Length: 300
Image (cartoon, rainbow, N blue to C red; front, side, top):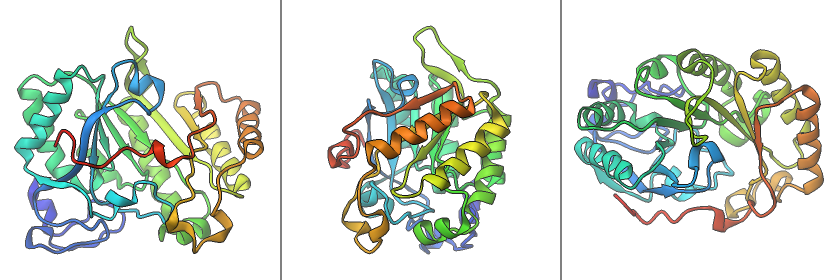
């Protein structure tokens, strides 16, 4: 499985670098170890993911996408975190289960898929039974997702853009929509209809997150219209207002602000009028740096 890192094409960037020889691609990580910045109970996901006990969130360092407005920039650029082995990652999964986490929540995991597969296989052999959530940016390769079939129970992808222009400006990924729509189709194929346990925790299914960007209501409407026409209410939508105007967006003045309540309300009304029934919305206070967890290597 780790042979895939010799000529890495795990994500649509297809850098082709030899990570085993220490080369870094767009995701900013190299080697066969895994860099993790936090592994702890997390209470700020959708209610059916966090529940009462919390989601067992494992925050991985590095990111294939690298959006200019990333609120987890401290780890997405591969700077924060501790390098661990596959065996240690497997132990972390079991430790989170022992802490009564509702699930294992793999946050930005794409570039570590080979190591994660090995760790999940080992953990399941040693008693891991809670659902596994693949929490990603949506910019995925179908071939990589197929490696996860049978190991991942819930997919929690972002779906950021329809426009190639916006995807290029803010994520240097003009092909975002083409890859994201194919990836989502594979995710839905793998999971089928959503399933919940007696506590309301999703144990199987897909939740698509869409983060509103300032001044881009037309883009959001196009995206929501596409998702509803394609999938109806067979997937859940999470429409997010937590865009945070951090230091890294100062060179993008058109988005260097938070979402107004009016902007958000209009998009929610639009989704309701489309017929969206299975969804989550956010209330005030999410666009705040305090919403970002400390990446202090807790639990690693």
